Length: 107
Image (cartoon, rainbow, N blue to C red; front, side, top):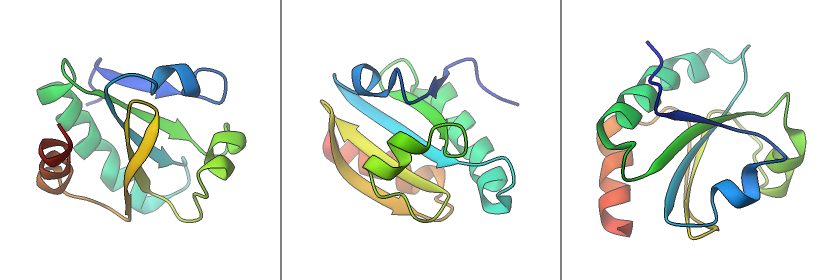
């Protein structure tokens, strides 16, 4: 079940959306099996801490410009941004704990 706290990033809103505070961006695609495993983890994380951290997804097929800008070669890739700068990258399916631990370190 998708959380209403999951933000939809795209090429046009990306820069302003990650410019302040902490943001978690899940780079994914509809056809990607591991991405479908990552999605519910992102939804759960957003449900728990989405009030403090902007958590969302960017479809790489629909938004290739942003994916290329951050050299996303494999999906799922999760990037954590702090005030507009990418500060942490994960490639492959990540647990809720791994993502939460990274956010705690960066906060």
